[in-house]
Image 1 (cartoon, protein in one colour):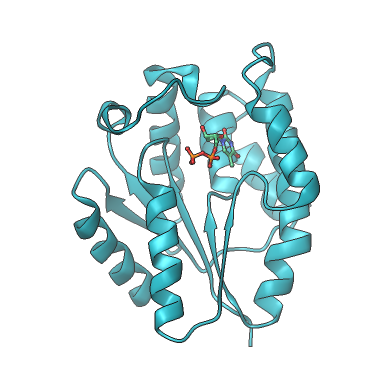
Image 2: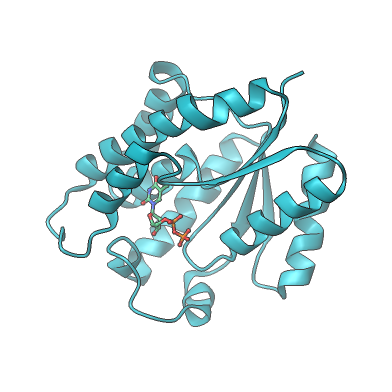
Length: 203
Ligand code: TYD
């Protein structure tokens, strides 16, 4: 039987990576075989593409280039890691997926949400998740949690992050069946409890 495919999405500083790790641990404790993976990267080629994307030196990179690079990295990840694991019956917990590209490059970068979703779903035919947990909070709250200068994408500022957030919320409204929006501006324990509940209910 195909495993369950769970995606965790959110803006920078939403606590996504911590919560995806906890969710994967929790599923494993409950006897599931779980694979956790991150975007971009997760494969040898994907990690190299990630290097190009996040290099602070590449300040002239345009959104369309980012779009193709994120999609390229993801194509490797889907083919080499996600699809085989699901086929083996493992649950896959993915920290970001093509909805990130739709929100960042599509909504905030101006490439357009519909175009990104069309390529991901109809052209690339990426595996569809069973549930997408969107950790939602205001970018100013998220920023206050972070330290350090961040990578190239993270440094684009609050206005950019606000557009990313609106992008995620608009995709969630279009895909009510798949998406669960979780208020992430709370202590991590509370957010995790809701995340676990949302995933259990959806699966
Ligand atoms: P990631 O490594 O997931 O960072 P974090 O741990 O902060 O979630 O992603 C790095 C940056 O790349 C982050 O600012 C989000 C951005 N990004 C995109 O712009 N488009 C994408 O498709 C993905 C996957 C990430």
